[in-house]
Image (tube, rainbow, N blue to C red; front, side, top):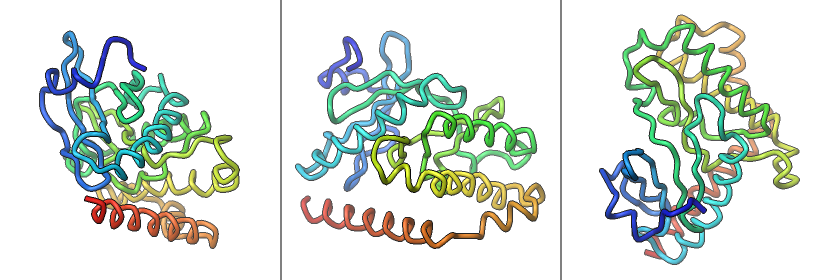
Amino acid sequence: MIEGLHRADIERLTVRVLRPPLDARPDVRLIDRDGARLVVKDYASGGTRFKSALGVYLVSREDRALARANGLPGIPRYYGLIDAYALVLEYIEAESAPEVPAEWLDEDFFAALERLVTSFHARGVVHCDLKKLDNILVTCDRKPYVIDFTAAFVSGSNPLSGLLFDHMRDDDFRGVYKLKRRCAPHLLTPAEERFLDFRSAPERGFRAFREHVREAVQRWSAGKG
């Protein structure tokens, strides 16, 4: 748990709501704690019993992934849990990659982004949601950051993660190439184009299963509201 920060402090320290809670999604807030700007992701705010129970699971997953990747350049520093429903990270002043000027996303940027993805893979973490391009941020000095490890897998956490790690790692790189195709298509190589479009049978099955689970969770959460 993060020392000295409690659930009762969240509202008082809030600077602004970055994303309000919706269905199974957490309340995401920017807070100011003694001059330090932090992000709180809270699943207990504005939720149902189902959302709170789901939140405990999702927070534990993200906590595991962020703890493993903590300290890597390009990943917001992780400060820990407030409780079983909420975690705290460094706030990064940045814009989502699809929203920045196209000239920012040059060869140097994509080389840095690939190094970043490789660096957390080397620690046994796969993001699993990089094709949602809002999870890739760009700072004013054109450095990449990756956020939102809610869907991440950590190698060794369960037998499934070991079996699918390579496929999920490839899926992360497809997120990089998807951004390149959308915002800097002239930089996309033929090999990257082929890689982006290829899906192995296990990967197709895993992606279909993941989407099915995501949709089921959303329907269940809305019904429980």
